Image 1 (cartoon, helix red, strand yellow):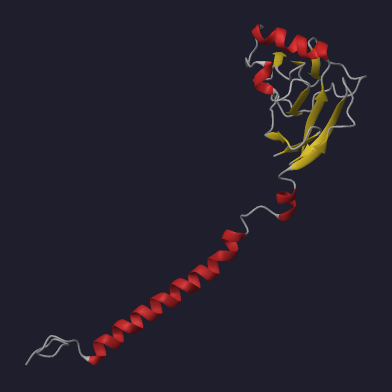
Image 2 (image 1 turned 90 degrees about the vertical axis):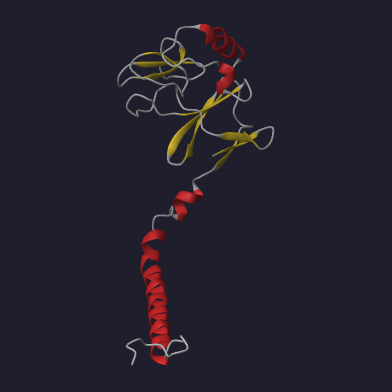
Length: 184
């Protein structure tokens, strides 16, 4: 007279193996159901299609003349593209040793000396600095000027005077041809 659910040979009875199977099957169906219920919430955290389309931007640089700037849009942000003159390049390299809040050499900010590419958002409070148009004030260092709080940037986009703590950001970019870049 045993109270166990197994026979004298130690094998489980049919009721016990059926119970194990039902427990395993129910757990599996529950796990699959929970995964299917949670998936829409996880999937909605992926970037939207319009955001993914803006993740990189190609810009044709051929129409930009020496000394001219244009503004492109990348990830909803303005990107300043400037074809610098020889005098601007010379001034930027000469200023490498100047005292700056965020020291950085001109060579570290450009891939080709004549092309300066940077995000056009002031690092102080997110304003858009002036200096893209020929008629805009360029600040004390000939680059860009943020009139909101008085930040002055040089011809390499480095902060030289004012409350901005960092230089204008250089986005990731590559030259895909002699006159074409891909930002992002």
